[in-house]
Figure: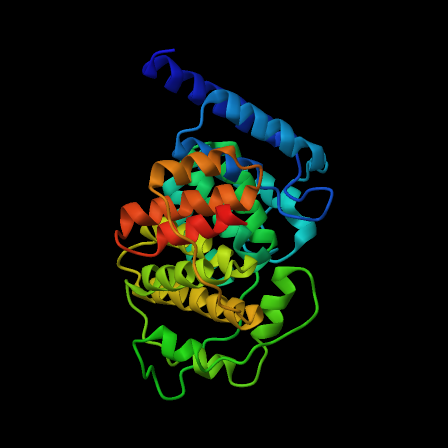
Length: 334
């Protein structure tokens, strides 16, 4: 098959699979966030063919459950009135579907992101990650579902405090002062929330000076930490940072308050994830060339490996010279 025909085949298959996603809920039968649309986008970005997309979609359906019955958004209620209510996904789905029918995706994102980004750590970053993938997919139905998911799992981490103002530009210096918070929970999201309640957490978070380089800097630290540990929570910091960085351009560039608040929210969620992890360093694996890394990810049956390697490849294009290949190799090494 010629390259043009192969590309058209992939695009048509992707569109059909995303259209079919509307039949499914956003959580699976195990209570985990559904990864199928995110994995499909990651596979396409890494060069997978249509057959691989079909196989990924088919394998994911084993754990999918039907979407709940439709529910109308309460007439006259502001869009943020049900934030953080997991049972309100059908209503938010209706709201965002109607909204995206009336306005361009970029206009909707500019209006909702300043508030949604304040709860960036909700559902272990899966809301923001799925939304960023949906934007990349340019699929209106998937974007409505992703925004609805993020809205219902919206969960601010810690509180913004600045008694004396920022005192450092070095996030590693702040992270070294964190205490490890153990909860015994097997789920990442409650461990993150618990870590943010540690004494002094908010004041420590406020000590870092934030700017336009904050998120890329944190992504590099997360990739370095993941390459040395393979920690599941830190994996989400690499993919979550990419999602934030991909979505921040949709925030009004003149709205410095919202941009700063978004970066601060991600930083607090980042800190809490590191605190909950209690990292145990290991020697990082040797990193093969990117064609081998991509091929390994495309062949993988692990959703998180696929998304992590894709995110590292995207970071490599944005921030050359970082520990991206090493982090991707760690994911593939298991």
